Amino acid sequence: MRIGVLSLQGGFVEHISMLKALHVDSFEIRNPSHLDKEMDGLILPGGESTVIGRLLNETSLLDPLETLIKGGLPVFGTCAGMILLANSIENSSSTYLPSIGVTVRRNAYGRQLGSFHTEGNFSGIGVVPMTFIRAPYIVCMDEEVRTLAMVGGNIIAAESHNILVTSFHPELTADLRVHKYFLRKVQKQLSLSCPGQQNYPLG
Ligand code: GLN
Image (cartoon, rainbow, N blue to C red; front, side):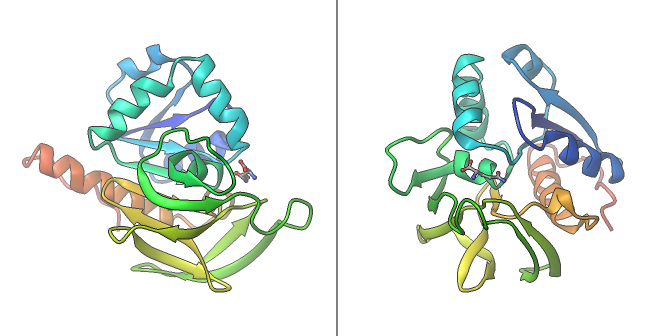
């Protein structure tokens, strides 16, 4: 199993460290030639969605990534990554890699005091630590999207088909379980396309 991590801006290093801790091979994606490597899953990190969006255009990564995602590649977007994957962004006509039927509110907790740490229940995992940094949350979503976690009455983690999104940053905690959750999605997809594939030991 090999995971590509979009590495144009933001917290990609932390995701790579999480994958290393899970003994999963990963590589940085900075330009289209990096997509020549075979990848089984993709992580879009936190950062500044407008900057990452601009760089996706400038590096010509937008179209090939869109094709891969539409083809069913499992993708995990954290914070800005969630914004990039949203089908709609409140008060904005921009979208980047729209692939999950949610509308997100950027900087939903305010710009200045919007960073905090809490704990919350994540469906199928249990209580996990959650670090929020000028985070978005989901203000509405299509029927096929499944809520995975809520904090303060707001949806902060969801999934639909091959897409997983969180408002918070599991890569900034020592808890590996949300990444493991994503890797199980990758594993599932792998065994669908290659039934003989050995299960990855995710505990
Ligand atoms: N506020 C940022 C944005 O709108 C997201 C912040 C983050 O990824 N930590 O892109």
